[in-house]
Amino acid sequence: MTTRSQTFGISVGSIFATGIRGFLANPIPIFLAGAATIGVYLAFRIPAQAAANETRLIISLALDLTGLVVASVVSYPWYSYALAAGDGKPVDVAAPFRNFDRFTTQAVASFWFWAGVLLGVRYLYGIPAIVALLFYAFYGYVIADGVTLSGLKALGHSARLGEGKRVGMFAIGALLFAFNFFGAIAIGFTLNALTIALAVIGFTLTSSITLVGGAAIYRTFSEALEQK
Image (cartoon, rainbow, N blue to C red; front, top):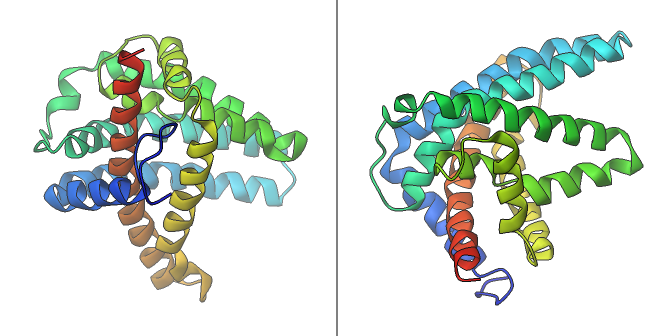
């Protein structure tokens, strides 16, 4: 996994190097966009968990889905900044807001993506959710890259990008998950306002690096698709 593969096309070291380098070149806009996304998600996740604790499962599911979709719409600038940083370009903070139609595209794609993931989590030990992630994980980059203004076509394009690379995607996905888990490790020591704040900051930092690194994977897969 440390060298380039014919099927995956990019090394783990290159992914992390791009992620760290791109983030450090544009830390403030990327971090703030990530913080906004995660903050919106938590605003729905906390009441969703409270509803689940009270066995109001339908309300909990509705809150979770709404939170994930709204947070994903808010994440469009995050994807845009990550894509620019991954390409080695300076981040144009205003760029995402010149294309408001892409927020709508993000909303449509996010609804179907997260509906599939949440339903997948509840059946067959969560395996369908993993499948959805492996097939459609790149839709945010597809939209930020302006490939299509159709949410469903963005999902379809994401699926095509990963053809023949699912095993490699699963492996790197597991590594990136572990990296992001480490970012939130503070919450594992004790649960109080300080550790929660540190966990949110740490997770925002690691997920921002991950998102920029993911842009490098997206570019590699896009180039491979264009050559077919």
